[in-house]
Figure 1 (cartoon, helix red, strand yellow):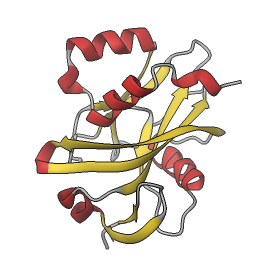
Figure 2 (cartoon, rainbow, N blue to C red):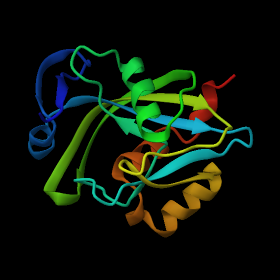
Figure 3 (tube, rainbow, N blue to C red):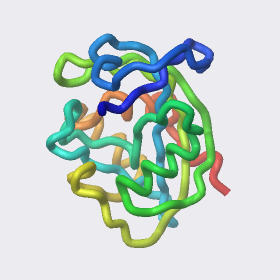
Figure 4 (tube, rainbow, N blue to C red):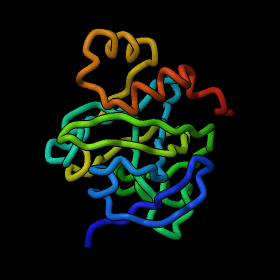
Length: 173
């Protein structure tokens, strides 16, 4: 059965559920989360999305992003997906949220109420190859340079978040 997304209004209040593909075809506002993991060198872990993803395949994105399941707490969903995609769990801090609308590949539309989480991790990472093609650590300044040089290799939401929150690690202890 296809994953169901939580449809929300502009205040992040649930208003229903919808199959994931249909929500992206229609551009319906739904709940999502984006995770940003930093290491001791203040580098951000970024991932290249698996090449078989139904949208934004092969593009670079933040450490992990996804959607909570209906009746699932957003922080718990973020922890679950971090472990499923990258094979580890670490404490996450909610640092903000925002709504965005972006066209993605395949004629699909991301329209998300996106919760942003920041965490810290330094150990070896074993990404799930079904979800992630590649990972790497990068400084924010180098990342911004790369985005300016080759914007097409990065996901639309990742670029929007970096524009809105240029210093995502501001709430780290």
